[in-house]
Image 1 (cartoon, rainbow, N blue to C red):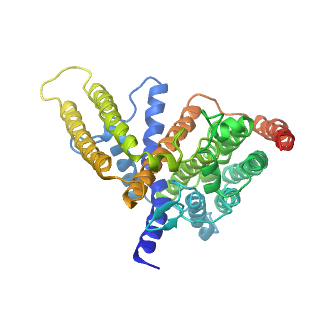
Image 2 (tube, helix red, strand yellow; image 1 turned 90 degrees about the horizontal axis):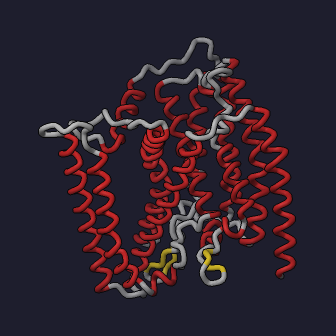
Image 3 (cartoon, rainbow, N blue to C red; image 1 turned 180 degrees about the horizontal axis):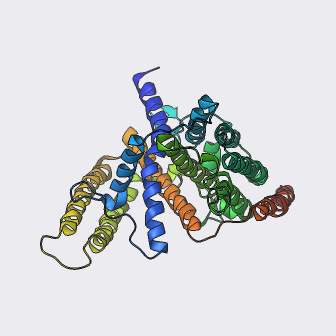
Length: 429
């Protein structure tokens, strides 16, 4: 292996491992800010380092420090302490490695060598996700059983039954999708969606298979134990469910595992149904050939976007009542200057690409890959917003309603969708 090969392996594995963890802070902050917006309040806006609150991000740091220094209590009645400790790690690990096969950019060509932009470049991407997503339930079962608590055990049984019930319609929804794509390789699936239907409609999964998209997204909500499917816990029935006996960092690991699983499922949904890393109407080859017009458009758009974004920061980062030497105005000024400096650096890079870039050069391929990674992360962030939005707008189902939805509604619809998809594919040849 050359030095470049080693560098690319490290880069791909690092992105697959650390991006989900970095998005933990984004997910928690988004959860709190959206909750505040829905409930007509500000959300986290007090915790800060000196006068810098970073829009609520510092609150996450405070919570992390609080959980790290809390006493880690293991009750005396817990007999199987090893399984009790291992259970959160299983759920967290399963959530992280389920993202490993998701492509975050098209195949990168450097010096004539092709590098697949996945943490683990394996062909069986969809099957890997289904297997690992189901594996996370072992952590939940172990947590409920080893806690020697009736509420914990009931919560884990509910969660296990829920995951099993919704994995079936999820798998059937994927079958109809794979009939269209003709591959289980996530890179091939993402590349397929770079095409356009009738020349102007992106061939995204949600366009080709809208029913499969709805079934898969609903099942993904259930797999992640997100509202309205968070039946593993219930304040009036089983308290905190399977993690009722957990505290300090072991509870935090369960908490983080839920958000990492949410990120991984959002990445899978984006890859299967929303074009993955593809920019609408622009395939990778189109971006490489038209690198100069792309750089020019970005140079013109970026200052406009930053103008409105910094204006929003200035408007929403001021005290309710005017006061002298307002620290919030100073904080906003610092943020705005930092963002404009960042914009200037990006503009200089884009100017360099505009002047010197050629389609056959390595820097052009790196530029396109970086653009696709940003596009992918923006789409994932939008899907994460949907998760949070649904949580704060739809009430929790009853358990019988949850099971009826899975077995009596989604399962027949998924089977019907397979039949219709097969008939259409055969009819169209």
